[in-house]
Image (cartoon, rainbow, N blue to C red; front, side, top):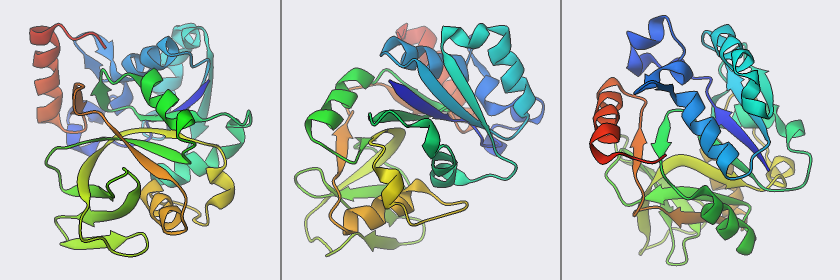
Length: 245
């Protein structure tokens, strides 16, 4: 199984920690975020992983080399300018050449989500992409119909809704948690280029009738570590709850 870890972000909301250390290597109770995600991917059978890098990239390369790439094949995708989630993924389309679905995981997401269960859900439902989502308060939502099929996107701050096709009167508003399972057929269907968000791709493909599904993870632990206060909160929770991640 293959996977991609999105780790190219500068981590400006984690300053001053990221002034001298890439976001991916900030440690959470002694373990760098990148290592936590890598070990979770390895535990579900991933043997080939690509990681995109930008800010302080050589520190990430040196970290992986010092640990013998954790015993798996790891490729580095160096971005000379930030390509966002869609552009970063598109750049490495050739890596996913085995015809099998793959996992995409933000490096700054901490979760005990059952990745194997999500992967099986994706395969069993013949989805083009499956998104880990949760019923929680956020500033941006994916909008799904009663069958869990993606139908739109909402920005609360901008008071804007973008529908993929016909607007719905009744829909589920769910927050995306930065974990996807994607089938490689998506690359031939992309029409975006350069730097772009994968959200753009998901919306245009959903509007064309492609199956983009929700995978509910309301019963799992999840934290976004992209902000300093959330990082400190997760450190406390890991100790207090003895989280197995």
